[in-house]
Image 1 (tube, one colour):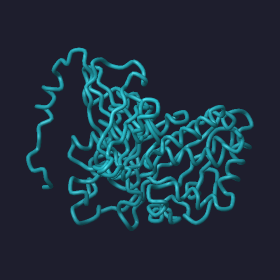
Image 2 (cartoon, rainbow, N blue to C red):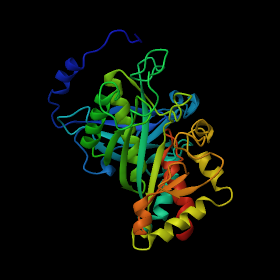
Image 3 (cartoon, helix red, strand yellow):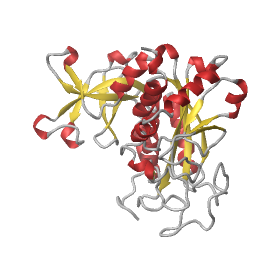
Image 4 (cartoon, rainbow, N blue to C red):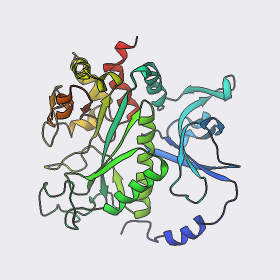
Length: 375
């Protein structure tokens, strides 16, 4: 058994969660830490906000998250989206997604420049520039559940592997195939309660691996919702005493990796004749130097993580070469069969890793495929 050894009762906790809190609101501020991890802390508000502008700017100790030096440690949290809180139901408690800035007393609200880990601000600039194209994103978040030891995939024998290879686990049912469904179902309901546009779930190819989809979302809302959905998943796993991994290749060998396939369309792609616009995007994604540029943006390690995943096996394309094809899951980008038939629709970029930064990925795709037409 892994520490902590004393298990705390969620049933006892629920008695306190049910207590009346009057008109006050608990606001859980959530942000990206210095190593792409999610952090949070709670602020009491006198009443629930109606708009994002009513939420106060807050701060945290950036020296404790590797986002500021100890000699000048204050980092500001600027709210950018809020959601109902499924972990504190019964009142009007909220989760507040924030991005991070340096303080500057000479600027409005005392907010200075974005800190280096604030990738939302760059994405927002791109999304504002391409707003007339109404970009939609649907992101398929794959993840792997682990025992509390962080070593054993959930449902696997300790120190060993399942007695059957990949095959029976994808979209499976049954105790012998589907490991961790209570986590998946709890997360699904938490997302629905929070207003996340979660569009589905399924078991994945490797046992203990699952997927959910967020979207369609427009522009910057895609990154906001995906990050909050990850926060909800980690919190659900915390209650079940299991771990969730977003590692793109959590288990070496003949097991599928984990991706974050990103489905993309614009109003022109969705309209009659949009297939030509999609093919134009393929040309831009395949232009000299673009494969390397996108691979560097498609995981949190500048492409190093995807080297373990994008091998040309296990439903991936080789990391060194861009390709696209209709209904081909061995290509960098898949164009759905119905998109080809109807000559309009969307494409799926299969290269983003499960740990990708959605602001970087969605912004990069727009920068390459759409922004040249908006200048």
